[in-house]
Length: 178
Image 1: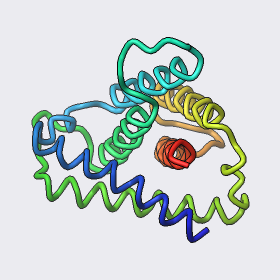
Image 2: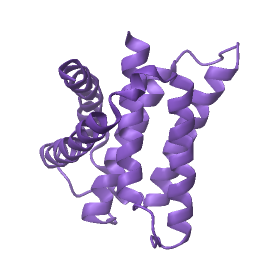
Image 3: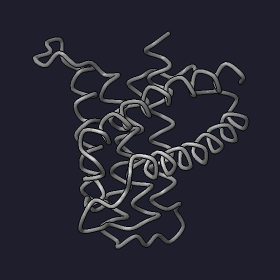
């Protein structure tokens, strides 16, 4: 599992670098987005990945990795929104947003390590297309929870679904890079 931890950190470093650069370009404009808007952005990225996996022709010169990075960053934004709430105006400096990003990555990585231990790194034997489908399934679950005003009877909450999507996207990037 030591390799997994290093590989995970390398993927997250790439994602965080892009997040910080976009914070420099745009500030925290994303702070005005409500959770369903973030969920829809993630859904668009996951649908595009699925299309790329199914279609032979690509008309935009961006592959799956950039879309998985987008899923990771949007999920982290959603976790921050869950914690801090939606605002009417951007309110986070790059430093504050980066600290929150790192906080949610640490929590999500710990979840990955715990599940990875219990499941024996089963994800290593999965296909990237299956990871994509799992992300899409999680998105449909999140949409249903959002439609239920965040209430669930026996299921984990929205935050756990975002965390799982982050971890599936990291696993997919690790697979693609190998």
